[in-house]
Amino acid sequence: MATTIDKYSKFIFSLGEIALAKPSEWSVGTLKAVSGRFNSPEDDFIKYVVYYSQSSDDRIKKYPFNLIKELDSEVSSNLFLNFINSDESLLQKANAGHLAKNVNEACKILKTHIENIINKLGLYMLAMMLHISIADSWISALNGDLKDRPERLSNLSSIFRTAAETYPIHSQNIKDFNYLTEFDGYKTDFLFLCNRVSTLVEKVRSFDMWLPSRYSTIAIEELIAIEPAELSREKIEYVIFKSVDSDVEEKILPDWKGSILFEGREKIIKEAFEAHKSKLFAPSITCFLTQLDHVVLELARSLKVDKKRRNANYKMLQDVCTYMEETIMWNIPVTTFLKGDIGEQLYLFQRKSLVKYLRDVVFQDTERIKSDKDAFNRHGILHGVFANYPSAKNSTKLILLIDDLNNFFHGLPKYLSRE
Image 1 (cartoon, rainbow, N blue to C red):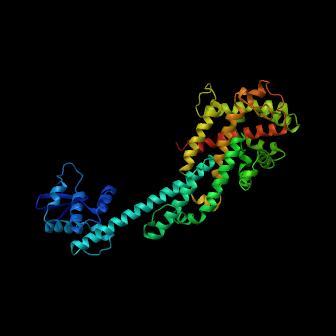
Image 2 (image 1 turned 90 degrees about the vertical axis):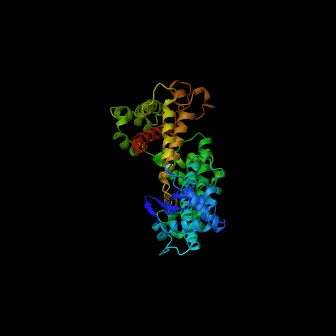
């Protein structure tokens, strides 16, 4: 008679005592090993079950398969039947309601249990893979690099939906299960969105542009509705700046007044805005550039970045963007895309375009700027290399750039607190 000790059952048979792990406690490895023997003759299958079920405890004697294989069929059958009937949890999960009457019935109970567990694990794995694939496709779109992800996502979505319909009983406790099964019907819209965003990212990157956060959500939603072939530099700038308020001071200054970045700088900021409003763009731009340097240094200080390190002023922002990307990818609620509320997810796109703009244009070495035409380069302006920078557009750009960095600064705790 078997005595249960923890997850093992001990039996006395012709070779001596043997400790077997109960099927309801089997590891995934044991489940796979036993399932691989489903097509073996019943007598062989029984012996494989006994062999694979032996305790992994090094202090307990194990029998090699060649000895178990030589067992008399009646001995191995009795051992197997007692073993299955000793696992009350297995019988409950299999809805047997009674002890197995014979070896054949015991084999059916065990195989049904294994198939249920494997199907459940398979569905869980598919759900996890689909979740990751949706997030990965979106992050790749924000990076302008979709490649073959849409095809993989489409196939995985169809497979998951089929599996979910085949094994509905295993859907319990799967996060966002209902949405994931419905996603197959929405994947065309989602992939269309990914393709449009990816194309827009490529365009913005190739044009060395950035999208101001204060207006980016509205602008991006309008831009992704435009046919990719029509997305010229002029078109993108038009869409962005047509949303900018004619009086940016009235919209932005209240936020700056409440920011610790500008404490003690109120007079400088006020005079810079007055110059901008009076269309004195040369002094407004040079003044705002000094404040840009200040904001960048404060960001570096808050992140404990070595201010003397070359290009630290944008490199540390790039590091934060990488961290933000990893954080966002693992926390994207897939229901976001079903609801069509993508504004928060576009935040990463906007931030990455900001960092690239700082790196490749604003803080780029002057000699690497291809042309001084419309070049918005900090070094070229403050060191007197460029002379054609005074314009309403450049002055507004600088205000929006400082505004973005101010927002970036005050949003850092949200991400850094997750480390």
